[in-house]
Length: 212
Length: 136
Image (cartoon, rainbow over all chains, first blue to last red; front, side, top):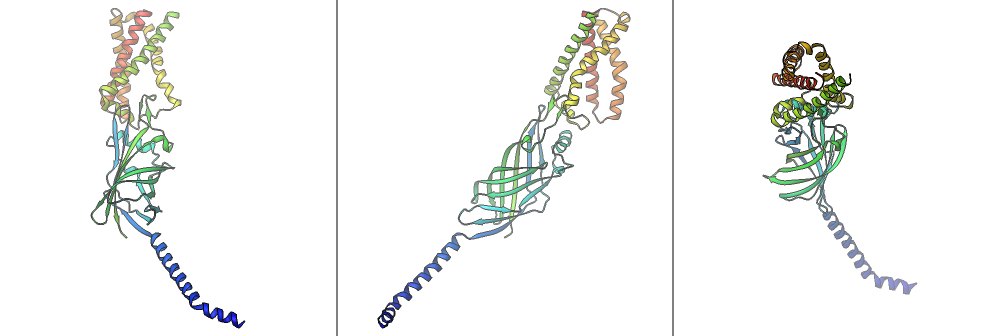
């Protein structure tokens, strides 16, 4: 017993230093880990000068239906972390009043709105899901969910990204789609001899202002 | 009787082909007029009514054949002149008042209404030529 106590006492200084070293190692690891996985929440306000245009065609001619001003007051909330450098959006969507689409040809405009079932579904919604790492300029990939006429479709989108000034950001891009992606039937008249074609090209210029 | 049926069916088929050709001509040459067919006053295409569009040359052919049988004796001249006469009778008596009323009640352009008048007169002329040739 005496021998054991002596032995323990003789061993104590080494034991304490090992414990201290372990403690410091844990602290360092925690610090490093917490810095690596730092998640940052930010908010982007969608600017009024954002535009959306849909290029379509019929067997008569081509047309463009556009909205040249975004009158909504939507804010996108995103979380980005230092590892993936991806922006993950939550509860972030653009809501566009379909009645504001102007096709610059009164007959097409009326048919276009009717086809999109504007009375039943007055808004086109673009839910932002994620956006890959981007720098001040360049191409960046993202994922959105588009909700049109009551049908949701998840789509990959490629944006051209450009930083404007200190806290403004422009995302510009286009996406080829079909009306049938949203279970919509394009108008046909006169026994189907006059018709709007299935394919559309959606162009967007989105301007954001960082608020945090 | 067989001649009358042959003339009516032949006229219907020719009128159908002419109506398709004229519509494509309108699309290519006067696209701004053709665009008006996207107006909400025109019904969206569907199986329930599309057949009526394609049956219309045959309905017209039957109606013009009835007129032809009743009045061919009093139409002057040879086959061409008889066809011209029938075309103008149809245009003035049948089309003009109806299109006048259509323009007053429905939001369509005068150009569109005039194109229908011209198209109808041409249809009656073609039908008249077919009847005068196949079943004089």
